[in-house]
Each structure stands twice: as structure tokens, then as C-alpha cells.
View 1 (tube, one colour):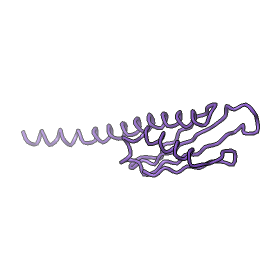
View 2 (cartoon, helix red, strand yellow):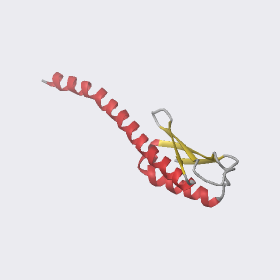
View 3 (cartoon, one colour):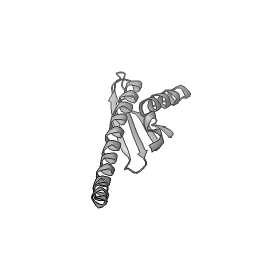
Length: 121
């Protein structure tokens, strides 16, 4: 699973920020790693000019095999809170999407299995 990090001009990108994003994203969605090819992370601060923080934004988009891209975002007072919030939302969104995908596959297989059982009788 590849994690790409993008920042706007208001965020100073450095190695510790990249490492933090990698760690948080990997911890949140590691159980889905085989089904995800890439995660795009976009960080921004919409109120960088003002002294009061509060509009840090983290947008995450996951590319899941066999499914449309899944995107979530979170706004928070600090960048770290926004990253954690978005990672939690991404985990829930992927879990929900893959659950629906597996349910659809299971329901599609059920009629075929029922036909095979009636043919054996």
C-alpha cells in the first residue's frame, strides 16, 4: 500500500510530519492493506494568516481494489487531530464499503449454491 502526502502552501512539510501521517494511516487501515493500492493524503490550513488555529483540514482518498475510490475529510484545531480524525473516518468508510462488497458477492453466490443443492437431490 502506497501513501502519498500532499500539502498546500500554508503547511510546512517535513520528515516528521510525513512519518506521523504514515504511522497514523497505517495503524488505522493496516487490516485492509492487501485490498488498497494507494492512499492520497491532502493537508491544508485554511486560516493560516490568523493567529487562532481551528481550520486545519485533512482529506484522505483510498483506492480500493474492486471498488470506487473512498474519500473522507476532517477539520480540527490542530493538524494532528485532523489527520487522526480523517484516518478514523477512512477506516470506517473502508470497512463499510468492503462489507457491502462482500455481502453482494455472498448474495450473488447463494442462489448458485442453492441450485447446485437442488440438482443433487
